[in-house]
Amino acid sequence: MATTITQQAPAHFPEIDDDGISDDAESIASNESDDGQEHPPEKIIAELHSKNGTWWYLVKWQDCPVIRSSWELHISPDTCPQLFADWEAEKKRQERGESKPLDLIAFTTAVVQVEEAERHRRTLRRLKRKVGRILSIVET
Image (cartoon, rainbow, N blue to C red; front, side, top):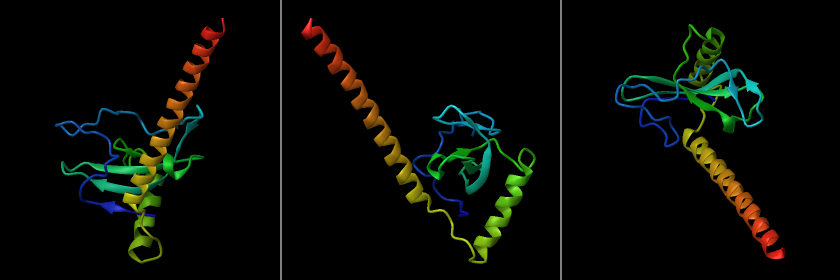
């Protein structure tokens, strides 16, 4: 699943301001997920070279589904040497045809669909609570 992209960033890519710095300056030592647990990085599954020369890495987090992977800027061979060694080996397997690259368009589409479903569920929960409050007022 190795992918190197040097073209336009996916729609679900972090925002970068004019000086090339992302507003998201979190360390990738771990990622807190929806379950409230800390998850260390498991592997790099794609990389992207942006127009301003910055390298971004799509990181899969341990014990999290691939769909919860995130684009990270603050990662380097100095900060995560084993992660990068494994990534370089994966890119070589891809070059030899032993591994297929991650389809970033399909990945981005899936991420957007999951986020839309989560927004929809939250909206339904809010509406259900509102209806419950209204019914409790009407009953009194």
